[in-house]
Structures are given as structure tokens and as C-alpha cells.
Amino acid sequence: MDPTLIGGAIIGIIVTMIGTEVLKTKIMQSIFPPPLPIFTKEEKRIFYLMKIKLDQIPEEFLTLTKEEHEALIELKRAHDAKDDDGIPLWYVPRSWHKTQEETLKVTQEIAFAQKETAKALEGVVRVLERLADKVADLK
Image (cartoon, rainbow, N blue to C red):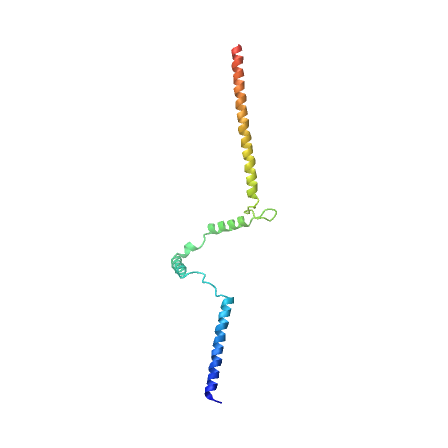
């Protein structure tokens, strides 16, 4: 067999293998694109500078005092508190807005009724004052 044919066949096989690998890589990248970087270079630089600053903070400032630890535990306990139905006490139901609107409407109606009552009472006072004047004139 001719050595150039064997060499050409080997080169052809290698080129085919490389081409197949490149094609496989391209197909995989189109199906599963590489993830985008989470942070830009500028953000990484800023985080690095922040880390340098944070590393300079004395350890005593980074640890909680006994009072701070107890306050944190109490805050967690308050956030975990639930009512009898198991609903967290910090939860605000969506229907609360509607309830507040209805309460506001009723309050506005009561205020309007009170204004109207005050106007009517002012009229009654004026009538009574005129009657009192007339009674005073009769004496």
C-alpha cells in the first residue's frame, strides 16, 4: 500500500474527528448556552475593594453582644409567632385593603351625616333663639 495514501487517510480521519468535535461543541453550545457571568469585571473589582475594607474591621465589631443576640432571638420569635389558625401574625391578608376601603367609606358617610345633623341643629338653635326673642318681647 502506498504510504502517502495511508498518511492522507490518517490526516483525513484526524480532520474528521476534529470537525466532529467542533460540530458537537457548537451544537451543545446552541442547546445549552454557557451561563452569563453573574458579575461584571467592575462589580468584581468593587466587591474585592469592599472585602479589603471589611477585612480591616476588628473582630470585636463583627460579633454580637449578649444583648444583641437576645434581641435577634426575640425578633425571630416575633416573626415566627402565629395565630390560632397557624397564620403568621405579621401576615397582612390581601382582603385587608378592601376592608379598609369599606371602613373609610362608612366613616365618610358617618361624617357627612354628622355635618348634616350639625346644620339641622344650627337651624333649630336659630329658630329657638327667635322664639326666645319673641317670648322676651311679650313680657
